[in-house]
Length: 283
Image 1: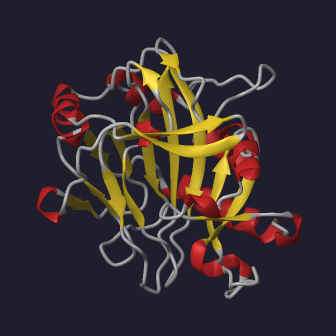
Image 2: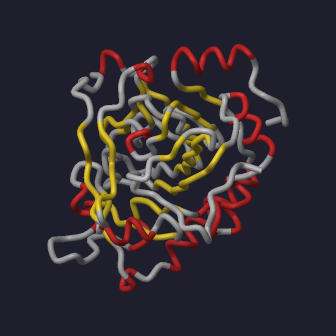
């Protein structure tokens, strides 16, 4: 994609719908490097070194300390259905990982290159981020047959700022289809209130209810099947979800979450950075 700001039409679509689909944003070479590196991280991962499951349905499965530590590191998290009741792998390790996070964009050379550059800076500027700060990165695998459902949520839940500024950059590293768990969104839903906040309270993580506005149903949602290389950007208040992957094909994606440094970042947010590891932008 050229080093140019978004068009007026694209900005209007984002403001109206709360999301924007940019096909072909990443080329074949970048995609290959990212996919290969993702699988290499899993190959090098030793489950005996400690890991936890990841589930959006039951967050008690995620070890608080390990998730908090991942704010400044790169950790692997198992699929909920990858382990049996005794914590033993039910599938090969390569097919067991739900996600890898959350500092890939700063800690890993391949994803550092993937996550920065003038093209991304231009998109961020076009969306109104005056001083982008990239807090989180994650590889989401959606493994064949056991890739977990991700229920309706808003990403601002995890990155509260005043005013709300978090913006999601979602890259399809592989084709995302209706069969393997593509994104679903509620067009215009970014104008609904924030329903909950995921906070860290003295080292313990918990979800704080904020608003009882119901989540959308299928009549108000649209799927976003996209080809590999597509970038989907969406507002932090946009409700979105994805179905479980029961197909034989994986749906590898990579996400970045950026806020505007001109806004106040909540000290209650689960993800914080120490003074020695400052957050930075897309440049």
